[in-house]
Image (cartoon, rainbow, N blue to C red; front, side, top):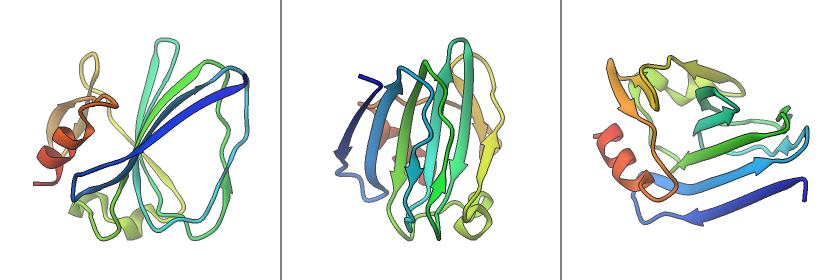
Length: 128
């Protein structure tokens, strides 16, 4: 298997869908146009990247390296944070700075990276 994906709906009013997975070989998936924006947590070996992405007004190819693991929080349409306004993110990815281990900076605070199972608690705290 070259890739594994798992997704689920959310009962949070802020989160549309949650995805996780990994790539066992280099891939170039095509992301379809979508009105939602995402927070992406990507790990490749010891390197971690956190990014706010989209919404996408057109399909875009995106390189994913072998060994990459990811968690994606796809927010409901209309949900936004002023410092990450969707208009500023259209068709681009904005990398968020990392803090200490398993933490990143957003809203002038250091946040622990969520897991697939605690995304709703994370989103409730982040958006409020």
